[in-house]
Image (cartoon, rainbow, N blue to C red; front, top):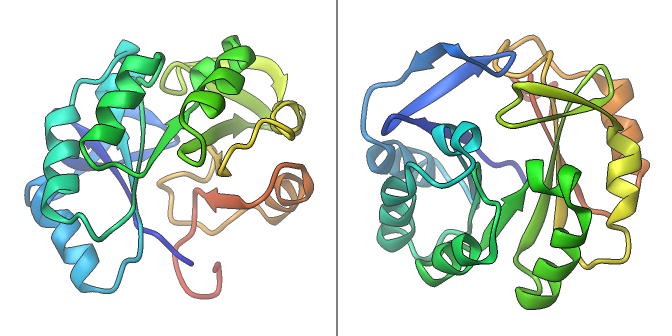
Length: 205
């Protein structure tokens, strides 16, 4: 299954290059309008990221996210960016979002993932964003010393619904995928894995 990847910054749909917030391309149309276009084209799931929230450490564009969830209740939505506590997760799920993506918090406090999987079974996805194989955090502003594959293995028995892996060097560049690192992540438990970053055409898929 393919899914459109759209990020919300300052209330707009944007695409970043290498995750740099200053180099974003802003698309015409509100987040709700753009979501509608993808759904009309046949999208079976929407991947949304609150970019401001990722940097702030708490939701900033949650209104736009919940508006999409309310308008299209038949489409599973997964949201990442600024999800660092149970209150935020509960609010998104109550608003109709199907999955929450834990990224930075998964690196800094792995036990948080374990607890959230217990509290919200079937609704937690781990987002692993990496540069040269090392995990990035805080809206990709910081590069840790943690290997992407090692981080994935930490959650093998926690019951996460999926691992979303993004190769930052390819993200937003429309230059194709990095097969080697993507395959490594696909083989690392837990599964399933969802690759993003650089996917441009059917050949990449």
